[in-house]
Length: 226
Image 1: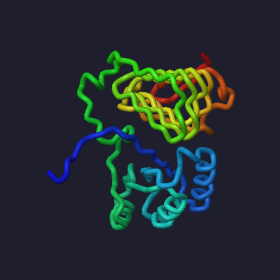
Image 2: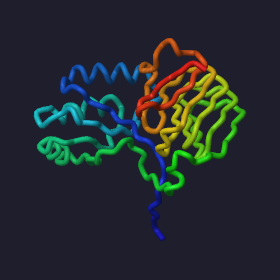
Image 3: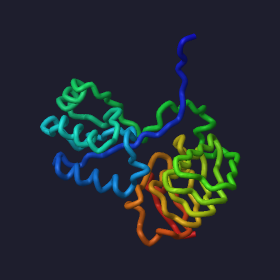
Image 4: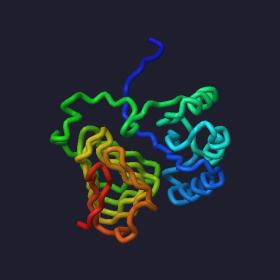
């Protein structure tokens, strides 16, 4: 056998374009990358949401601006304008169908998708270093240590961090919207539950450095003091 094709779980960041103004897009990208350099590092794969664009938008210039920022465009999503779809397709960029979130290769069984699942727990007692990635598949995750900037923490269930929470923290990675995140010192580059996410600058400042609980309500992230 020369090759095999298998499913796996990984998330893709979606860049939403709300304006066709090239200057605005460029400035916004620079600001986002400055605020989350580990998360939006060079060659980070992304999808581009073009729902708010049409065929009169300068797609080729928009593509160039995003590529020049260092992000790696692997496709676009939410393309409903047929003429724009033709332009994008002719440039060789894959067009993804609309989904609630982009977790590719999810082959969980029905019982695993059930929000009532009782997850087992993965416990880690050592600090998570920059560049290190932890994935608790079909389990809750408890970390009794600090999570450093540039680290990535992923769990299909809940995440508890008894220490400073930096880096990228993604709970409910397989789509479980009942998952929650708990931490004793909030300072992340990104938090996500069930595919809904906030970058650092989207988190209300009054919760920075505090003990908090994050969850979803009406499909939106909410944050509370512990």
